[in-house]
Length: 393
Image (cartoon, rainbow, N blue to C red):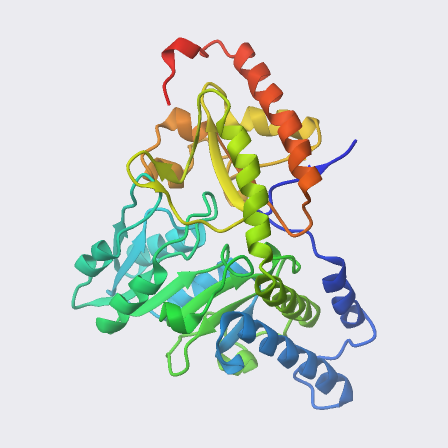
């Protein structure tokens, strides 16, 4: 059976050239990067080359990067490391659970006060709301760069300026933005920023936290002086090499305008799906139109069906898609992102995320479009609640 993978916001396949770059560090070059002998210095050099590559992708100094095990650790390191007991934190209602659950823990265990900024029907927040929420004891604003379910881009540059003017730390989770759009920490004016390798074709289990020079961070792990005493533990050399190679490829791809090509493929798929009856785009409304998004993501609702039933039915035919965040797979409740945007429970549970990767082709899009309409129609025919006359978009 042919299989097409359109769930790249959950994870991406490791590209062949990235795997090839990593391969020597599983065997031939095995040294501990903290050792002073030849084997150690060989892997140390590889780690630092990768640090330079990631720094180039984010337009920062290499010394401002902390390698982590992924996005969740980096988010937690920023949020826990930049706040203290009793601080006020500002975040949004659509953040990844790595941010939301970290903030909830601080509220419960450290008596921090957390303000949650709402979004409009497109999934966009208003920077003015962030400004209004700032208090004398506000320590941190943490707002994501791009949403993992809808792909909607938040006005992070404006938020960064607001935080800087108020002398408040600004952290942004850029896990779904890095490698897809230009990420420049200076334009964003952020103090910390999170990326995760497996979202742009590096392996799972490696990520990074950008930390602006001079920013004081309390570490979460205690041990050796790795990563300039900001993250103890022997470095995952092979993973870091993969992250560095992925950053190189992403920078080159953005320079060539490949993000526009991906957006064109996404838009073609989107147009055909939205031509189906009782469908709509999550990330748009009738008053303001479509929100800015990363080029690879679309999130569409199909009224009258259960999203998970559609995911399973498409998977049986060889197409992999999702109802939203992979870490929430199997959740009984509908997406917190979509309900925060004002969708009803039924419509949120009838929504599907399609996310392209560098490995996808126009033929993959054709394959998906050949399956989705007929599968949606069949599920609606089987649904006891589907009534075309009763539904309105």
